Amino acid sequence: MKIMIINLIAIISVETKEAKIQRFQKGINVVTSSGVVDGNFTGKSSVLRSIFHTLGADGKFNYNKWESEGKYIYILDFSVENENYIMLRRGSFFKMYHKDNLYNKIELLFAVNNRDKLAEELVKLFNQEIYLKSHEGTYKLAHPAYNYLLNYIEQKEIKLTEFRTFNQLNAFPASYYSDLIYSHLGVRNDKENELKENLNNSEKRKKELSERKNVLFEMNKEITSEGHSNLNVEDLKSKIRIHEERYRVVINKLNKHKSALMEAHNTRVELELLWNDIDGVISSEQSKLTKSLKTHTCPYCQTEINDEESYYFHKVKHIDGYSLQKLMIEEQLANINRKIELENNHYTAVQKEADAIENEIFNISKEVKDGILVLGIKEIESNIIKQMTLVENEIISIDDLIKDINEQLRKFKKQRDEVDSYYSNYLNQMLLYYRINGLDLKENLKAADKLETDGSETNIAAVAWLLALLETKYKYNSQAVIYPIIFDTPNNADLDEANKYEIFRMIFDHLPQEGQIITSLVGFDENKFNEYDINVIVLNNPQYDLLNREDYQLCNNLFGNIIKF
Image 1 (cartoon, rainbow, N blue to C red):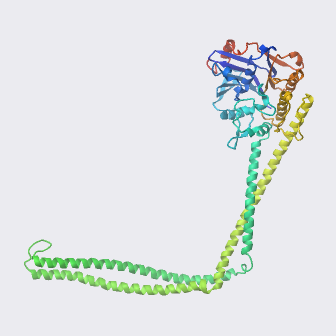
Image 2 (image 1 turned 120 degrees about the vertical axis):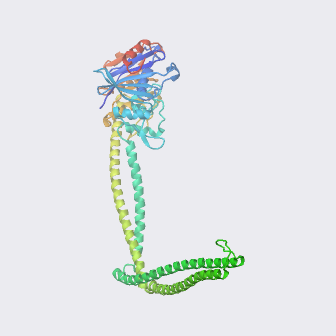
Image 3 (image 1 turned 120 degrees about the horizontal axis):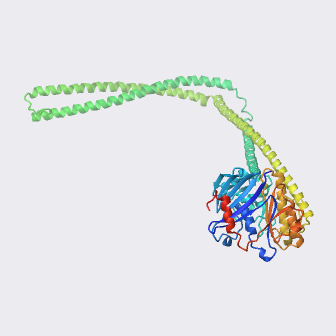
């Protein structure tokens, strides 16, 4: 498993030129201050909140006091599998670097200004994907804050089986709880829900196909009833071929006469137009001749006519030529009209012959008519059988798909059952070992079940709950990174003295191998935890005065190549 170790957190105010650098070690780290009242408000919570805040969560700072000087710059130096990284955050802007300590070089890995992109980048390093259902109803990669919910306790928001440790946890509907838990424990609810949706759609489709298959079966049963299956198809085809040949000959005759009629009609139209043109010319010429004889003037050259008789006979001869053409056209029109009459008679006779054949096929020969009907029914029957085959094949494919989906769902259920069983057993053992009362667990407890306890046991029960989930995660989601356990003042409640320290023993006992714990409390007494190797960090600064100028200068030395001071 990948182990993440926090090396240091730096909080920088460029405006006031002050900063706070806090270093941590592998193993157990306890941030503390004096046990007296003045030991509060020295910045323990601010230091712890800043760690996951820098990694994309939104810490529950009192922003009116905390960032009164302006937005801080947060720099987190951490390691994953002996590789060193630096994360910088200012507002909603994030930059991550890879740090080569051997050659004292850093390489920019990414720079983003939104949580969606940040989540995508951090998956590459932490190998943990939390998929939750969005407000739109689809699963999407959750913002980084959801990655750290099992590993962080906010002293002011310790709630059993609830997550209130960061701000802005409303990016997903409140129903995300179960998906979140199982996603952390290695059971991909988004994949399982996708399978369930596919199963539902497949079963719905199978039902539709089955109903269609029944309808097709009844239709096929109806058309194959008595009287429809005794048709001699070859005999029917032979009879139809005889009628078809006769009908083809008649149709050819009809087409021939139809073409002749169309040609004759076209010729008649042309002759009629020509006759009308010549008739108009004759009328015009006769009118001009009458006028010229009255005026003794040629209508063309406007000269005086000296020999009227000669002029008259010349023009009459010219007009007679047009009249002869007109007579010839009238003769041709008579011939065309006769041809049209004959072709119409022929066409009518052949049409009657065609009608007679059609009557033979469709009226006279009942056997042929019934046979054609049966052929149509047979074709319908063939199509129905084809459709039934297609439907049956699709049902078989869907059955195979449903079988595969159910097999995958059984694997998910088996995995979830194993996870639930391990979690339930582990949590019960913790309650027994650390003598945690007031928390009765039901049989067949599931990891996503909500728990209740009385007020005096809330904090210690919440810690036990998170630690049991983390132990389950280590076992069943071993590919994901192991984040540090950061519990800010987990005994911040009206606990008796025994429980105040028992809660820390429980935390220290669950230090991941080669991992890290960072916790805090006021007035930590090392002598009560001699069996543990603890790095105690004491904050001696005045109240509300965490940052200082010395650390600002140190930040300039450490991170001057990342930001300009």
